[in-house]
Length: 257
Image 1 (cartoon, rainbow, N blue to C red):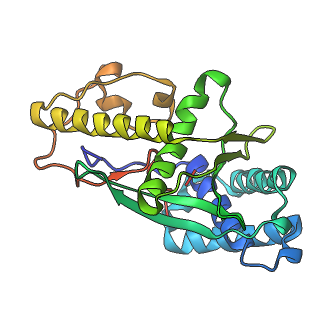
Image 2: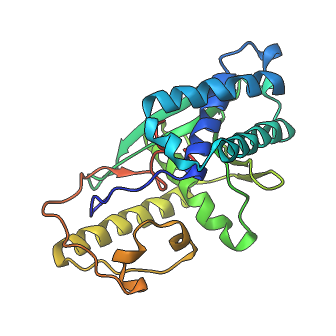
């Protein structure tokens, strides 16, 4: 975002966009019609819609066979979803909900919540779909940070701490990760977000952006420019990024995972 370098679309990210779009539109149907078959019938139209909006996505595939395999993987994720939740018993209050809130220090937080469920008694459940595999126990805290971010924004907006945060993993064998936050969790998240933004502002002032190698480097398009891989980064553009802080992970290509 700082260097404004373009990135090639990835099959995993675009598949996540398509699967999210299908699950969003599945809940447009009356509850009795929310079946596996209905979800699968939505898949190709949503892929064609996305291609119409972003024709370059067709270039991700070497041939039709590779694209067919990619679609088959998306179908598998949709089928797996029905083993984790029963959409005929759910009536989401919101889908793809844009939320934003300004903290006391002036920092604006914003993001998109995949699904918001509200119980008849008023309790809020925040749901996010992930098309990757569930993390191991040592990485759960990092995965939940995004959900606590959303919970913090909703708390500041509505004055209510969400009762439950739920990550629905559609990759691998499929898994649901649940966490019940409290005010202490969200205050700690607010402090962490504020500290992260302060570190970004310091880097803007000094021009020092320290590279940090991680497993995510395997998916990066810019290793040739990265000091961790012997590259030289471009000069930092003048000016500063917009002050709002987006949810960790940012937006998916056209709409999450």
